[in-house]
Image 1: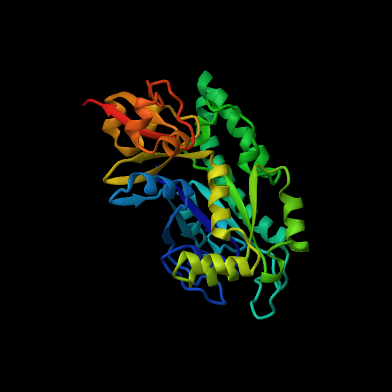
Image 2: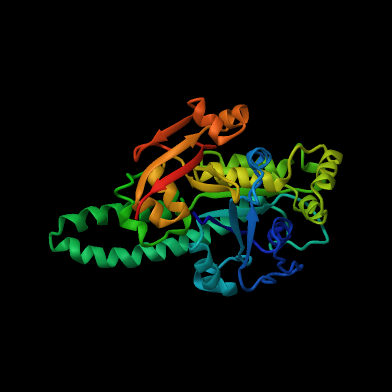
Length: 365
């Protein structure tokens, strides 16, 4: 399944620096707003130690990790919801992503201008929230006017939809994000077509200076306190460090660099892990002589849905799935040995795929 995260934030918070550091595409980084006019898209391979284990066991012709697309969306400003600073274009780009990576400046640097003249992560976060909420409110009110007319005619379905839309309007008017409205999955269909910006999952990236990468600072503390209670992830990253890591060619050099900073993993890895956790994603694998490959699916998906990620024919003509656990593969070394030891299970349509499953699908179309 394709996964796309949009990187947003005010100008000069480190969005493009972070994007450049984690992507093989290069956005222009400049000390002024709107240096990124068109959204830049970078495809990021997701590192997974289990792929290395399978590669050593299977010795395939190629190894294909799963990937996440990151979209660097130009800096928003006050008034974006009304079109300020090319706001309408940028907000439309946000509407298309699965999750929002909201970069918040948590570092002081007199050489990098802040659009409001001072570093205040809570205020910065609220500016973005307000612009997204205003755009959502506009979408809700347009639909409300249509649904109200139908509800007045006595349409029961429209009356229910009207009540749901009103819930969202009330929340937005109160300065709350759409994701805070608690309704059933069935009722969410009333707003599904609106693709509300503030209903999207959010990861807040606290961009800190190199000296604060371990302990954080007062800005990070203020941000964490402010977003406490939201269903969101907070990841502390130094975009400056990530930019230096990106310049290194080999894995060994990167590991040495991280050790010098006393880090066990890069900010990129933390961001990817947070993305998977927030979006409730897991990985399963296919393994053969031609390729070992990782596939991303939603937690709770059943075998036919998981098969459909490879090809829709696999889901349509699903017969069964042959499943091996990684620990068993490591112990018995080959697929055939696992089978002979009774460690390959044969699963039907109701099997719920588990993270790390090694799967082979039988299908007929």
